[in-house]
Image (cartoon, rainbow, N blue to C red; front, side, top):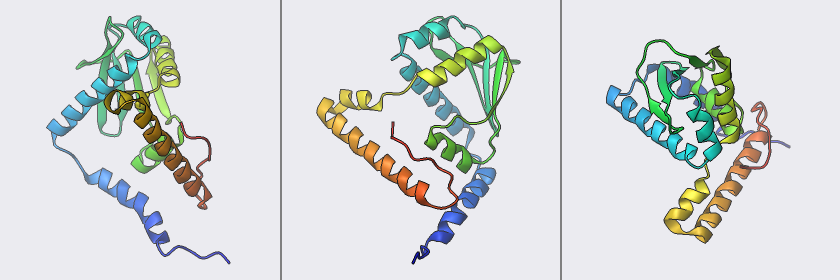
Length: 186
């Protein structure tokens, strides 16, 4: 006989609470600004591990890329070195607008490894290059961790994290109505 969890109400209420909080929460401008700066630094860190990605991005130097989601707008320009710099410009060569409005749904899609739904406006060739970057460039967290604590401990910690993620995905996939797929952890 299947029994219902006494916390099932929390699983149903959590997405609504997250959506309400996101709709009403506006962090200070300096927090948003510094978060965007850190995001650009992180993206460049990941790009530097892939020479092919840097070469592809260098060919697009000076293009104006605008990423938009809800109230968040990020303007980037590829540099001659094949990295990204934060821009402040009018107009765009490529605008990518994430159409998913719910932060919980967006986070869920990203956790599954799905690409969010995006409306694309502008340069098709630039859009193809950005799509290639999204498909082929991955952050190797284990490699970065190994620089801090050594190869063996980093491998063990990463393996434990992969197993925990696989167990979490399996648990969530077994819950009715979640729609999550099971699969191997990356």
